Image 1 (cartoon, helix red, strand yellow):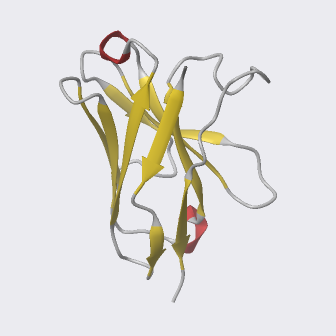
Image 2: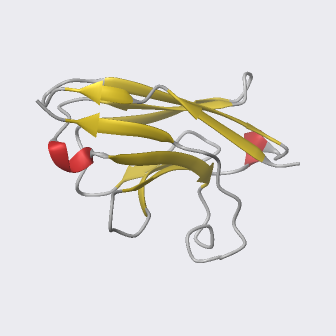
Length: 120
């Protein structure tokens, strides 16, 4: 059974930092690209960062230079270090497989996510 357990969210002031973690199970983690996604109120879910099995990564323009995605294939975990947070980063953050079909497939399983709120 596929599961994604996200943690690390919270309330932070603008300019602050948070580190999110995800522990997927039920997937062959070490060979799959993984992604961090977010959904802000009233907006569609979007991919913010993706990391390939070999450690290569890419980022949405809105977070480039501020967020860093990493993975530990030995521990089956994927993390997102977020710095210089802005109010517009407020969203529920999810991890999932970083494939091109993840967002568009209505049958994609999503975990509970972790809420990130950036506010003074």
